[in-house]
Amino acid sequence: MSDQKYYTRFNLAQRIEHLLLFLSFTLLGITGLIQKYIDADISLWLIQAMGGLVAVRVIHRVAAVVFLLETIYHIVLLGYMIYVKKVEMTMLPGIKDVKDGLQSLGYNLGISKTRPKMGRYTFDEKLEYWAMIWGGLVMAITGFMLWNPIVTARVLPGVIIPAAKAAHGAEAVLAVLAILIWHTYHVHFKLFNKSMINGKLEMHHMEEEHPLELEKFLAGEEKPLDPKMKKRKIIFFPVAAVFSIAMLAGVYYFVTAETTAIETIPPGERVPVIEVIEPTAVPTKEAVENEPAPVDSEPGSTDLTWEGQAGAIIQKKCGMCHGTAGGYSVADYASTLKGGKDGAGVTPGDPEASTLFTIQAAGGHPGQFSAEELATIEEWIMAGAPEK
Image: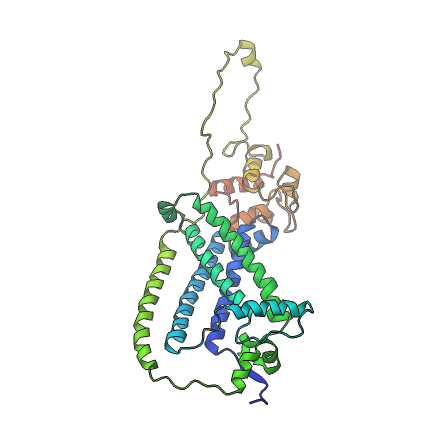
C-alpha cells in the first residue's frame, strides 16, 4: 500500500454534486451581483448579453432552484451515511479543530515547529463547509422573501423586505469574496487539489494535509459488515421519501407562490401626493397680450425635437445610468448624438445606425422605453434628430 501514488478521496457521485454546486453558485453570484451593482458598465453589458433584466432574473432563480434541490439531496445522503452506514461524522467541528487552528497559526508564524496532524477534513475545510451551510440558509430565507414579497408581507411587517434585500446582497458579496480569496488560494494556489476532478489526491499531499486519515488507510482499518444495516435501510428509505416529498413541495411553493419579483412592470405615472395651489392673480389685459405661447416639452407633446419630446424621454429613462460619470452620456444633445464605445448614439435619419434606438428596440434594457416612447424616438431620428 505504501507504494501507491494516489489516495481515492471522492467518488463520482460526490464529484458530480460538487460540479452542480460550482455551476449553481457561479450563476447565482454573477446574476446576483450584476443586479446589485446594476449601474456598473460591466453589469449593463452582461445584462444585455444575457437577454435583458428579466432573463437575468429567470437565470438567477433557476440556479437557486438547482441549489435547493442539491441541498435536499445532500441532506438525504448525509442521513443515509450517518444512520444506515454509521460512518464517522468527520465534518463536525470540535475542540481539536480549535487546537489545530492555533497550532497552524503558530506554525505559519514560526512559533511552533510542527504542523498539526489532521484527519479527513482540516479545521479550515470544516470552517468553509459550515460557513456555506450558514450562508445558504440566510440566502434561502431572504431569497424567499424577495421572490415572494407579497406573501411575506402578509405575515411579517413590510420593512422586512428591504432588510432581506440588504442581507441577501451583503451575504452574496461575502460568499463570492470567500470563494475567490479563501477557497481559491487553499485549493488552487497553496495546493493544486485535483481530487474534485479525478477523485484522487497525491500521497505526499495526504501526508501534509490529512496524515491521520492516511494512517488509518495504511493500517488497513476496515469496518466489518454490520448485520443490522438492512434493518436500518427499511426504516430510513420511507422516512427519506416523506422528507424529500415535503422538501420538494416546499421548493414548488417557493417557485410558484408569485412572480412579482421576476416580472418587470413599466413605471407608472408620477403624480404629486400633495400639491399646493397658489391663488391665481387676476391677469391684466397687457399681461395676456404679452404672454408668450407655451412650449410643451413633456413626453407626448407634438414638439418632436430634442428640447421637446425626445430629450425629455431620453433623459428621464436613461439619465440615471448614463449621466456625466463616464461612458455614454445623455446629459445634453451633443453627447447623446456622439454615443460611446458601442458607436454613435444617434445617427440623424437612420434609427438602425443609432445604438440608442437599437439597444432599446432589443428590449430588456434597464430604463426600457415604452412602445409609444420608442416609436416617438424613432420618428424623431427619422426626422433628422432636430435639436430645436
